[in-house]
Length: 505
Image 1 (cartoon, helix red, strand yellow):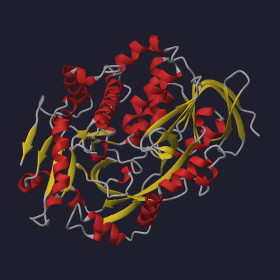
Image 2: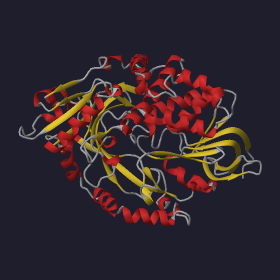
Image 3: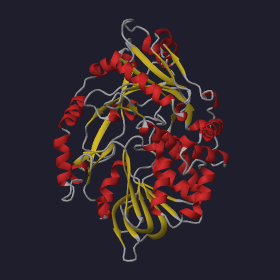
Image 4: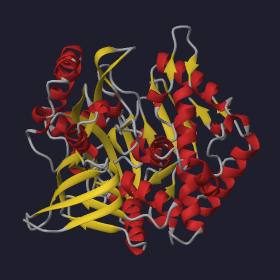
């Protein structure tokens, strides 16, 4: 038993992009607050935030078809795409502030300009893509997007995908050059290096075993250190940002808001190209449509990535099922997350999602050759020897009772669960996650520290000029933000022309 005990203002559990973002925001707002971090692995950004566990798309809804829904009347609802794009603009502004403040030296260490594309086949899908394109480009946030169903133009954009493809196959794509590839693992490590210099107490190989409320209203954590000894730490505010591990800790806190919530783990596998000649022929993130019955996080995409200063090419993800809530988790994670208060919720979800479970099991059983068949829908000439399999991170989708979906509704997205008094909060869920970390953490700050918001607002607006403003009503501000963030982050070559809109058919 260790006799180490500490009292601190803020404890962050998990050294991923969410804790890194919240810690950095708080250190800018209240530098005098003491912050302590506990991470069970040996370094920061090793689970969901890691570059090999995260698609790194810089989700701005430029290419993800599942963020735009075709309604019964045939029109396309872009409201979710607009919301996610505005949230990503918060991230871009905050990262720019960190670069301008010399807190980040070289933005190319974590962000690179890269076209984002949507690709569909078949007349029905092409009709949807065209309607989606028209709806998005009528919105000032999505200026610079192009549409084409012309094979010659598509050959210019994506030669690797178009060559060796039957000429009679209807195919179309949209392309926008202002997309990005973000290495969230690298960004997480950069931010934690910065926090260490700001005297944040960062403890690796420390597992949080329990959380309970102390008599004075603060939170007491039982933490097992790298030697296996137990330590006691108390804080006025606790953020549980442990990825898939957050649900168990939320349950241990005992707060009523954490009741009737479950988690459904989904694993993933990517294929990585090992042939530099093939990698050199593709330069974009290209998203297709999810198969019927597939979860949204399984949308197939062929991505150029920049990892360890090297250009890579990844295809996937192939979904799978594992009862683990973390890549480094336990086979008992799912079973031990079922409690008396969420049992009915979990059973209802199981009954509703039999087809999803069947789909995930089928995905697990796929041979490499079967995975190659799916890859060849993107790259007709793909050779099996050019591609290796890489296991991606675990994602735990939130299950809860909702008015719209009833008992046991499976949620696809990112959610913050916080206590009524704002002293503890947990982040659950998956995509768009890391890309919207700044916006999600700003909402958390507003919810958990309402007594400080008025005093903090000027600093927040200095860091994120569009904070509290709907960008749709401020077209000039959109252009200003796009220009300034692109210049600061080294993305200027990818800027669209003001209010450009192009259709090539």
